[in-house]
Length: 357
Image (cartoon, rainbow, N blue to C red; front, side):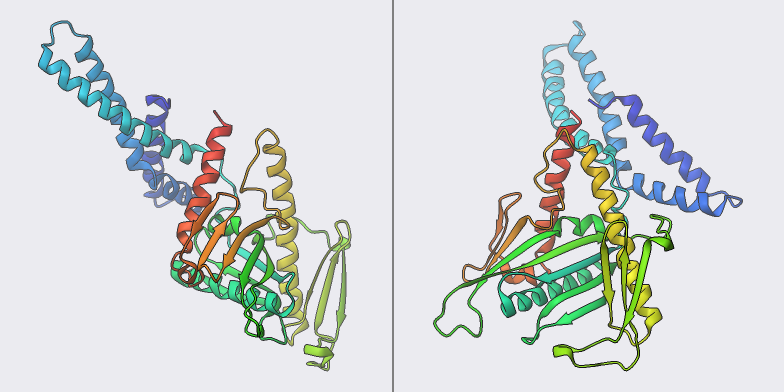
């Protein structure tokens, strides 16, 4: 049980931050830092205050029940109130415990999403395009902004690979559980006998790293420039504008050729490289922290089959939490995406709570 003292310390911290932010001579960095913390506590402060009051009400009710002078009718009312208080206590405690859990520092960051067509040939590339469209619509619904960094189109009008950024509030926390293999079952347009085909695409969601998040030594990079080419080897540029950056210690390679400017391609490649290295380090630390617990959804393993989109049955199933929604059209349109996303976050929180008991 979370103590009254702990709840009161949260309320006091909130009040101290409020007072600090009202000062005119506050340092700019401190203002930004305190603003974030104030906003974070602000999301739970009313629950904390209600929980603290509940603690006090519970003690008052216990005193009535322990008082031999209290008449029978008052004691019966106190018992009924105490039962109701205990139910509210469970609800409030869970919310506050979730708030007090160690936070993934990457949760507030923007995201870089990489989608690659897997098994299934051209049909897989069309599915990759469907997933890209879904994340675009989810971004629009949430007031986020999606911007393509790199795209390799297929002959069928889909994508062999597409990499894009999504910027906005708490993007990574909402999308980080999308990493893994997404499988689709449907009848392709080219199928003449009506047979259902199974294809797949891999999604990787990376927290967009800034220069302060991870230091990259220029001496660890090999940068190659080459002439960009279009579909089928067709030349789209007469200058060496395409850029390939190799991080020698890890072997991570990023190649970008979408822009006509070598400088812009290099900047995009560095953004992706920085985020891939940051993600590898973040997952390494997370793995060390979670050796003692088994997580169903928080592995971020890109080879793990996480979800199936079944068009004939109009359903989408997440295999990590055994949740099936018979709302495939609405899910791909982004309208019902939050239902799955919220369920994944809730499961993750439950696993974290279980691990700290």
